Each structure stands twice: as structure tokens, then as C-alpha cells.
Length: 243
Image 1 (tube, rainbow, N blue to C red):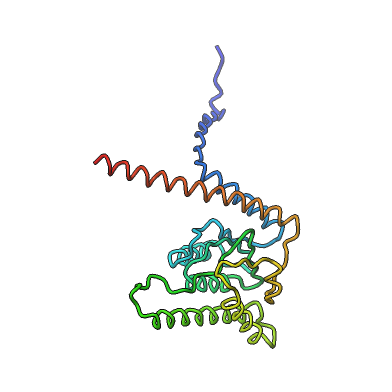
Image 2 (image 1 turned 45 degrees about the vertical axis):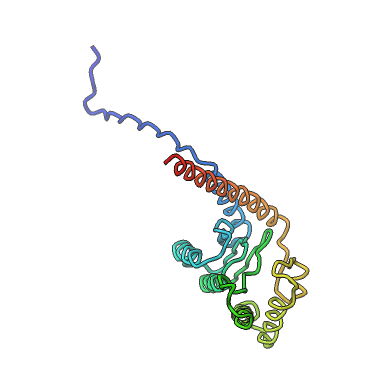
């Protein structure tokens, strides 16, 4: 009969591995995007805020969500890259967002636009059609002045803050941005931005390839989100129809 060594430690049984949670298509898309964001951060040695994963329409709720993300994950940032895609929105919210990014990035701040970032709505919305034309015109002109003021404030506090002619340059750019185009949706590409006098550069090819991959996956994510929302709305209507 085999003797048992009482001093020999018995190894506890290995815990069973829990099965991995199956990720939804949306979660897989976000994981791919964040992996690419990490890759871009290593390439540029700069933290990246993936703003293109946020809702496309700018509004007050988005300002609060962005603040919470910055306060939680970007408190001690010096340099910051912001990946931007936007379909426009409330101009006051757009200004507030820009100021938030300026506050948290104490060093270099770059906004990277893979595809588009529409200028924000400066026309007064939700006005009654019965308002007199003079009042409508007055509201519109006031909104234009607000837009110029915001452009001036943002450019003189960051992009041109070290230039002696910052005020004049920013005023000229603000005037051209607000009044110099026949339509709100006119395209301002790289060459046009340079012509306006903005400080813009093309990303190096190795960085750009990562940025473009992020954009493509972000588009897939947005489509999946839209489809999920549409399916949820349809299911809600079906339930109401059955009631």
C-alpha cells in the first residue's frame, strides 16, 4: 500500500475558464476602432480622442458626454489629437466642445478630419413661420455675428495666439467662413483651408492609412447603430399595432 506524504501540498484544482462573452457586431466594430486608435497613438506618440464615435449631430448632451470622457481619461494630457466627423449641429455646443478640448490639451492640439466636419448651423431654428420677415432677418444677422465671434475667439486663443496680427487674421477668416460661401454645405478641402489662412497639414502616409482604416470602421459602426435603431423602432411599432 502506497503511503501518503502528509507534508505534501495538494494543488487546488484549476478553475474552469469561463466562456467568452460573444460580442455584438457593434461591440466588435468599436473594439477594432479602439485597437486602431491605440496603433495611431503609438505611431504619433500622442493621445487620441475618438470623437468620430460620438453622435453625428452636435448638441448639449454631447457636450456633457465629452466633458465626462475628457475628465475621466484625459486629465493629464499635454498633446491631444481629436478624430473628428460631424454632420453639424448647434453652434453654441460646437464652440463649447472646442473650448473643452482647448482646456484639456495644454500642449499641442490637432483636429484630424478623415472625411468631413460640416460647419455648424448658424441659422435660427424652430422659429414660427408667422414671425415678421424683419424679425427673421434680425435673428439671422445676429446668428452670423455670433458665428464670427466664436471663430475669432477660438483662433486667437489657440491657432494664432502667438501672432501679432492674430486679431486681424482671425477676423478675416471668420468673415470668409460665415459670409464667403454661397451655401452652408460648400466643401472646404485641404487647399481651400490653406487659402483661408488656416494652419492645416496633410497627415504622413503611414499615419493616414491608420486614420482611414479608423474612418471606414467608424462608418460600419454608424451603419450598424442606425440599423439597430431602425429595428428597435419597427419592433415598437409592431407591438403597438398588436395592442
